[in-house]
Image (tube, rainbow, N blue to C red; front, top):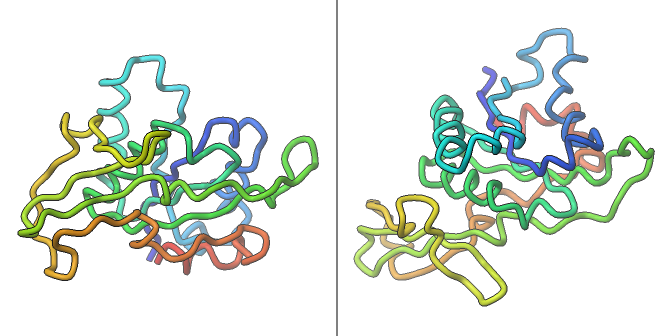
Amino acid sequence: MAKRVFFSFHYDDVVNFRANVVRNHWRFKLNRGDAGFFDASIWESSKRSGDESLKRLINAELDRTSVTCVLIGSHTWQRPWVRYELLKSFQRENKLVAVHINSIRGKDRQIKAYGQNPLDYVGVEVSTDGKWATLLEHTSIGWKPFTKIGGTGRYRVNAARRFWGRGYKLSHFAPNPYCWMLHSGYQNFARWVA
């Protein structure tokens, strides 16, 4: 059964068509359900309406999803709204999937080196009693609370004992990133998001 997938990406990867290859590959399937997903993402250009409006828009689009797929371009890991989308997705317990897209030829017909995995730059720290979690982001000065969600990044959880008192990058909770070209994304994306 097809999942509703929220795609998180850098707008530059839409402009150069790499993100569109992944998000629109269902158009070339006999049955849309064969692609394994329905796209629930938004366009970064929506930022024009302000931070709070964009948060509401992201939250509303995430509400109908069970999977968040980050499309990894050259600078995706640095984008503040990508970080928001990933941490909010984790908080609401979406499955996380990462896909390298720089191996797809852009509108200039060129490929690029892999970008860094954004899931390595956001994380979570669980309290020693397992009742609270703090969402984190990695900055030039190290790990710090991600305050764009809830003001402190802290929220109630009922964490399994093995997580108590520990911090994790979100990449810990996701499979290793796939490469759209190397791992045959056109054929395998439905399995990745299942």
